[in-house]
Length: 365
Image (tube, rainbow, N blue to C red; front, side):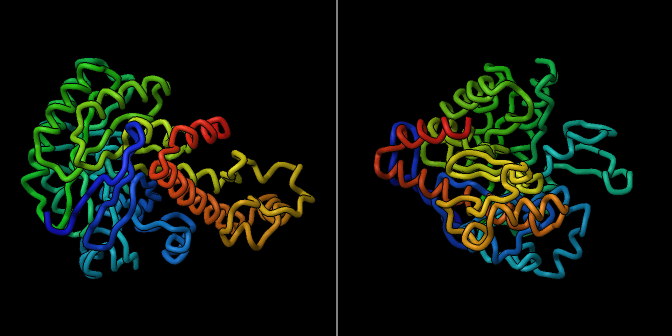
């Protein structure tokens, strides 16, 4: 389709190295997308994201629909100009957020829910979600789906699978180039429903396919087993996106299965709580052991934080609850994730992914 291209250039086992092209540029896969829910990645300027190496970020249709609302986004000519981000944007349809809220009514037409902002009644349907994402002008649009709790019964999960399929077809009818549309596979923790949903969603010609409703509280072995079921049924020539994976160890396992795209608030949330991802594993900068430590946060990192400040200073900022500490750790953690993905891609190109994975999964597990 015009405006969106994907090609796999190299495989090492099932791990894939490829490139995605959108209207707003290109990025290599496997890719990690920082989450900018409210048209910003928390504590990061667009310039900081660019310097960290980010070339695609995620924003959320649901939150932006509620505030500032589509009138404000329209005044700016779309989300890119609103937040001054010149690169690619993927927008989640809001299904995950909506189904975590108190619901008034869910049926095959859409869902009525209580706004978390003022408690008012709000209605969202696949058609409305697509209309909102058109206004946002995102490069990659996610189909509207029904995401359910991992403890949901078989019957509830099966109903959600059927509804997700119906909504996927409506979503496809309402999005066209240059925006790309990704379908979402559901099915909870039930293998037969995962297979069924995979067959249903891949029967629709989407530009990419996402694995939804996992890494939401179920055991890690279940996450991996269900992912394998889905990936086995996805086409080889389309990008595969696991929604909500952010820890290095989980990403490494999913890349080994052939997944290409990831997003999560994991690195930014960790940073706000004083935890840093380093090439030697995770550290908690609030620990008293760093009070007099004059070494950088990570000697193998060239980000602004690591080339400028000591662990002692960062420890001080967190001990005094200074926002700058959170900012500096966020810059580092996002930079780390970008560099991790870069090295991961290189390992695939060099045919050394297995060695790379084994080394770093031990460090982070």
